[in-house]
Image (cartoon, rainbow, N blue to C red; front, side, top):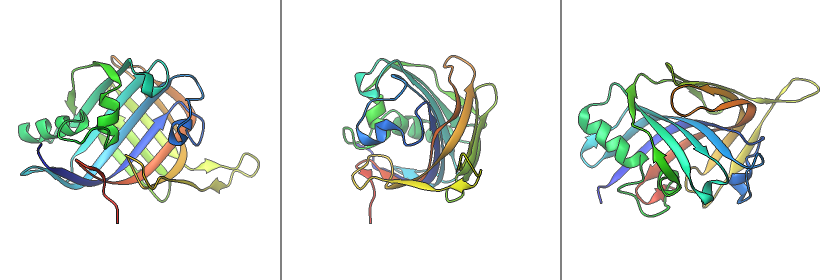
Length: 210
């Protein structure tokens, strides 16, 4: 197993209502799970290969709860990545070089049966974790915009967090609202649904804590 580790930030939007039942070991409220994710790697490595400053994104579709499988996905890798960096990022994203079920990458890999060819392209990411604002844009594939949840009466911004002391993706996530539309082979559309804004610190054994 090649050792890897990175620190970064993410925006994820899925079809669930705010809170996302999956975060609480419950079933998705729509009966299925469709999701879009974008990650900025601020610093990291895979073996001797540096990953600082690179971006990745993905689209997922599961026809039912994630743990029941039969999912489909497509991965996007920063066009700035070298051949070695591309290979390293795809190994991480596909759950390789990772303890079983230790990260979301490893968990999702066990539930996906159709993996589309990865796309190497420009990934535009805007991520303000504390402000619960962000954007994922991949030309012809992803347009996601995230913002804070707002009070239905006053319109004021409302702040919420999910804390997962034993989670496999993050320790703390700021929860917001997002809308997504995708193109290409994996089509997803959401409007004002669950969004998580989180700082990530992961390695091949899971979330790095402390």
